Image 1 (cartoon, rainbow, N blue to C red):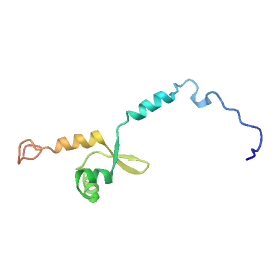
Image 2: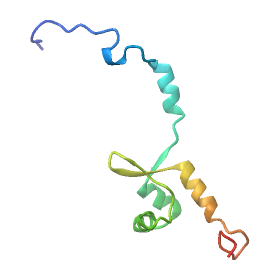
Image 3: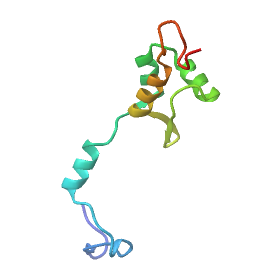
Image 4: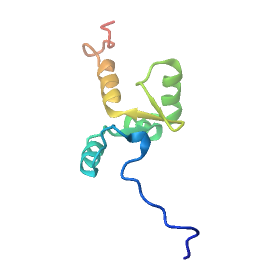
Length: 100
């Protein structure tokens, strides 16, 4: 494969990053390995054993766990799902989460 023109020189650090801290690959891989898992709406529905349409309805009505939009797709942080589930727990058997 033939290149057109002279070979490009790699800059040591792009000008727009001058003075900024850069992340090493070790630091980046550590950060990525500690990121919280995100669930798709389908994964959440499967986990809760409810239809996807129920999850969508809960989100529209403000009843379900908080969501995150990533690239136009809805995702759910596992910590938000767990917090929401805890808020749904009955205060006593047969009583709703608010004790009523």
